[in-house]
Image (cartoon, rainbow, N blue to C red; front, side, top):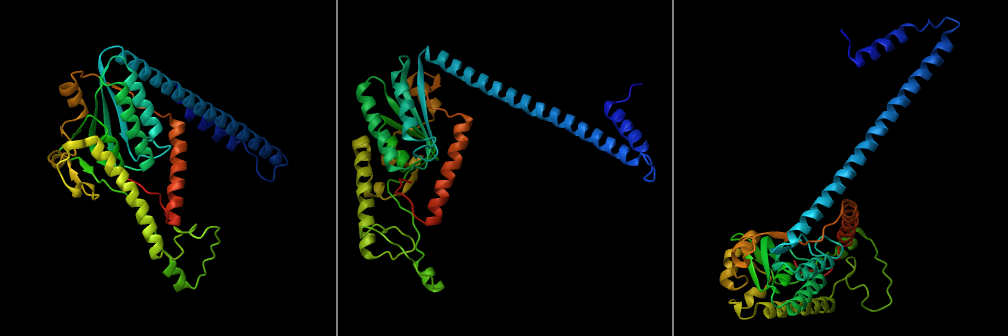
Length: 335
């Protein structure tokens, strides 16, 4: 019976060790050098085999990834050849260079509106909000595209969360659909910061901040935050809030049934939002495509990122957020 290969190697190694002469033998040093050389060559051989295995595995992964992307693109191309409902997703925080950046969302919307066979467009949203600038870009572009393509309706469908900047965008749609448990609203603006001045005083640490400009250090977390600073920042936030409120009223119009509480930063369930006029009905993306649009096939026009881009973005974004947390200074955000 033939023994397994690993048993054969073990027996040869054992035999080699058994052949080593005693330490008082004149040939002991030469035998030791030979043994070390054999072990080194065996280690090199194993390392080469392991390296080849890693390279082949990486090559197979890249081939599989490329084939998947090609098949996805091929499937999307087949889907756009027949009547369908276009889908553009907004997932996660709305911020520059993020998955839900204005650039990515707008690019997907433009392609969706330009598709000849798209009966309507669904903007599927699952986001807590984010940058007022990015949200404003998308809101303005939706209005422009709707004017260019008046026969192509656009519906917003909110999933788990459609709050603040995400609702800013949704309010530009022809109609908004939600789930009963969706959290929606939060029409307001916030800016996060910390103040460490008293801690510095307790520790006897002197803050040395030099500026050119009387109020250049207004958001420095280690300096005093007086009434003038507070009033100035509050005025800035109120200005942004007014822009947000105006956009929502422009988008929703007479459908809004609530009062000032709608713009207080509060949020509601999807079921409550229908009664308040923040949304128009209950339904998922597939429901809207099937029952409202009449084209059940959904074709995704969202702009996808490759693996390396996601990795680079994760590192860069994480560093920026950690830096903001350490300094205690944040940009205004609709969330």
